[in-house]
Length: 152
Image (tube, rainbow, N blue to C red):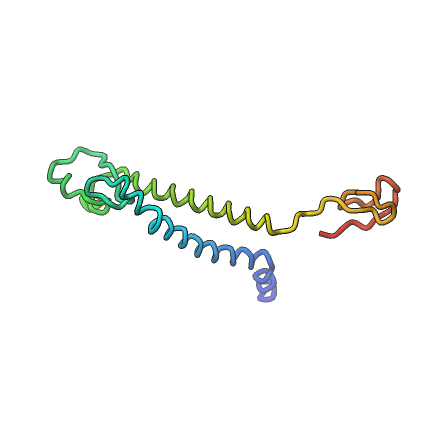
């Protein structure tokens, strides 16, 4: 059983997945830092809401509040501590922005990788008549010679 597990764990696709998860976690931290430390500060300055400077703290209380409660309500944590239900649209906007940046970053990364990787060859030349045939062909449609299929 140990040999089977070792064979399974050391297969290429399992290792690729593990490496992808590790790199993905590190990439997520970089993107979170980009959003929180680079992109959101200017947005906070442009869209600041009275006493709330952190976009993650933008919220709307879902119940009627007294004047004293309104003054004490400075953060989502304060609302939770007071037992007040809130609509946390700042957290949602922050998560949407983070997702868009991650998706765009992954798109750019995949685009560059696709540019660097060689294109998959769909045709090849027949060794007998030198006409262009499918890379998967076993027989040339022009000269009818039997051909060994190309390996990927």
